[in-house]
Image 1: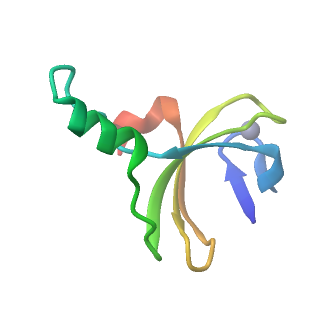
Image 2: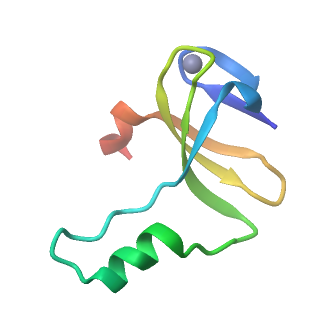
Length: 86
Ligand SMILES: [Zn+2]
């Protein structure tokens, strides 16, 4: 799988550290059950997902990726610092 870092260009997936799904965190006062579901329970969809990746062996940037899990096609990539522009 190839990931296009916004700063470095297309690179092998092994240069990156996968952090996980890009999910909105529950509110601070939400119940332990809500936090448990957020931290431990995941769907495993076939199709587009949004994820966080870290370019560990490159520029050291956190990036947000929209990827199709069926084809590994990169649908969108953006620096985490630009995330509010989505
Ligand atoms: Zn990079």
